[in-house]
Image 1 (cartoon, one colour):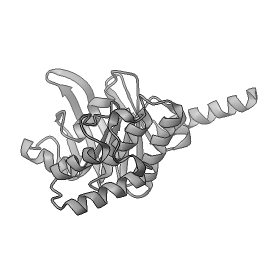
Image 2 (tube, rainbow, N blue to C red; image 1 turned 90 degrees about the horizontal axis):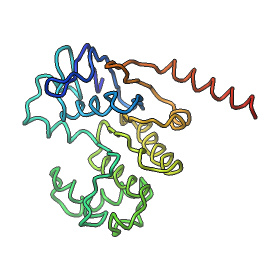
Image 3 (cartoon, rainbow, N blue to C red; image 1 turned 90 degrees about the vertical axis):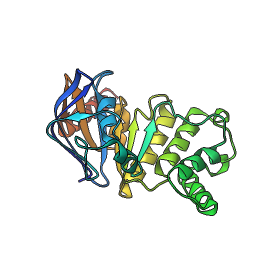
Length: 238
């Protein structure tokens, strides 16, 4: 089990965000977090990589106890994770290749030829092998997000956390980004993605958790029944 939360509370300083959280994620699962803006989706994701504290109960991420986790161990945990942000967070003063090289050097890959080989591999995986020498501002939003996904998989992570990774993209680029992440999950990497895009969940089905009213619930069955009803309604109208 990559993540196991049992009766956990999440708060920012003294402000409660989510209470009695029960959440699980295993290897190769594709998991959606849905809910309104401000419902706590990003806060929950931040606890998985030690950006936000969790309190009471049980909170395990990749065998780390997140309640007792010390600051000095957070870097080791994050080396096993890939994170894809809505706003890309690329380094704008260097090209795609150097953006990726920066991450590999920061995580301890010392040999330049090994770094270059890995960069070529991930760019090919996301269909960006011909953009290695482009600056971020020379790329479209969809291309920048594919570079971000390449960055997230550089270190062969056990888990990818995608916080509204398609939120700033148009429909077609949203689909392409989700398809990449879905393919990655099918190869054994856990992917957890927050989204408002029901069309993605319809096309790339997975486990669905909803954040609402300070709680987190598994609504997979309910949500897919809802999507089926929408499909039937659409077909009857046509």
